[in-house]
Amino acid sequence: MTGPYATAIIVVALVLAMWAAVLVVLDRSPGRSLLIGGAILELLLVGFLIGGIVQMVQSDRTFARAEFVVYLLACAAIPPIGAVWASAEKTRAGTAVIALAFLITPIMVLRVQQVWAGPVG
Amino acid sequence: MADPGVPTAPAPTGQGFGRVLVAVYGLFALAATARSLVQIATKFDEAPVAYLLSAFAGIVYIVATVSLARGDATSRRLATVAISIELGGVLVVGTTSKLAPDAFPDATVWTGFGSGYGFVPLVLPLVGLWWLRHTRGSEGIVATTQ
Image (cartoon, rainbow over all chains, first blue to last red; front, side, top):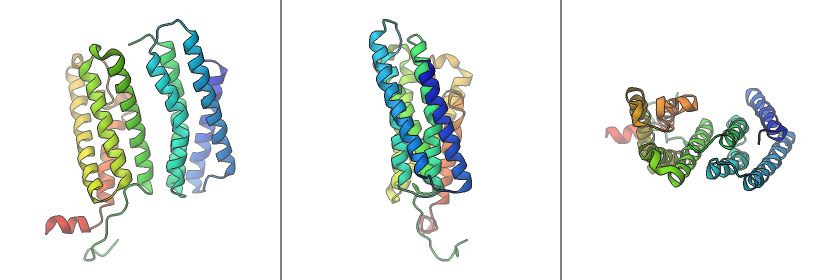
């Protein structure tokens, strides 16, 4: 859960967040390449969700399992929800929503890691 | 600026800057609700007040998110009420958590004026109320003064 895979997700999400933030500043619409970047991030997050649940099932440790699954689901859900909400508005505000979704993703991944590491409580 | 003599219709609350605001509200709705549901389901006895308060905060954020996104006249009123409750909640819970930390054995989204969430919970209702005021147009003013 704290391995290179999770680190890769954090790095990809931060790069995409910065990219989207630059587009907001320049007042440019997100292009095809940002969309592809978002799709790659989403694939990584779906892998994180599946891998996380598999590791959880195989583990005997005590940690907040329900919370863990909820945070994993939230990780995978946030970029698509952000994209749908942003797509209704082809302006700077729409791009800012996309930037926000990418920025939240690493925070959610860190929360997943905290729940995985920590004891119940 | 619009001519003050000509009533202007309220602007949508879920577009432009409002779209970003709704996204932030949606995020807090998700965070507070999901967190409280897990806490209530798994360890309710440890801190029932804190967990019920988290659930209440989650509901307030959901109402604010949906009503800001919809933005019709009823939704504007609902959003104003929800965001006012949110402001009251973060101030009361924030103050209480400072004066009597024992009252909250586990943190809520409003504990310490939202310090666990970068103080966004304290700033968000102020921005929300400002946005409702900013987008109301002058029809609302005319309607309430007549």
